[in-house]
Image 1 (cartoon, rainbow, N blue to C red):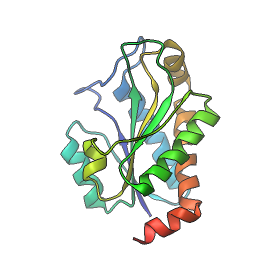
Image 2 (tube, rainbow, N blue to C red; image 1 turned 30 degrees about the vertical axis):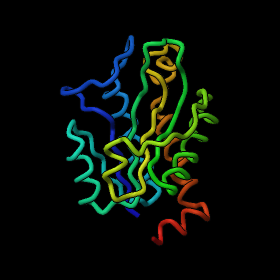
Image 3 (cartoon, rainbow, N blue to C red; image 1 turned 90 degrees about the horizontal axis):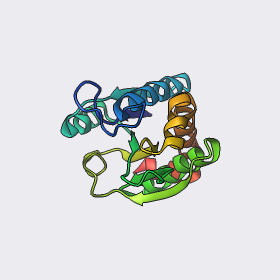
Image 4 (tube, rainbow, N blue to C red; image 1 turned 90 degrees about the vertical axis):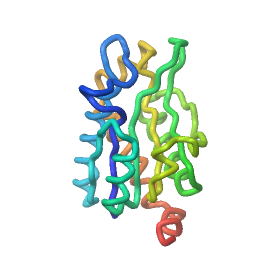
Length: 179
C-alpha cells in the first residue's frame, strides 16, 4: 500500500491562507510530515509532496503508484465566525475515505463537522489515479480554530491517520482497492 501525503501550498513560495499567527503552508507541512511518520510506523510506504505546481503534485503521486492520496489544507473565510473541518472527495471510494477522516477530526479534535463535500472540481482530486481526498483541517481565519491548529498539529496528523486506517481496515475499502 502506497500513500501520498500532500501538504497544501508551499512555504517560501505560496503561504496559502494566513491567520493571525500561522500560515497554511507551514501548518500543512507539519501535519503532512507527522502523518507520514505515523503511517510509516504502521508499515505503509509513504511519500510526502509539497510544491506549488498542481501538475507536479499529481505527477508525483501517479509516478509513485499511490493507492491513496491525501492533500492537507487549512480553510479560510472572510466571515471570521466560520469554523470546522470538511473533507472533499471525487469518487465513491474517496467519499468513504473522506467520511472516515472527517469523523476522526470532529470526534478527536472537537472541530465543527462541516461534512464531506463533492470536490470533483478540484484539480488534485480530478487528476490523480489514486483514491483521493482533500482535507480542510480547520479555519485558520477563525481565532478558536487557529489556536487549535497552533498547539495541536500532532493531534491533527493523528486524526487524519486514524481516518486513513479506519478506511483501510473497513470492508468497503477492500472491495474498492481491488479495482
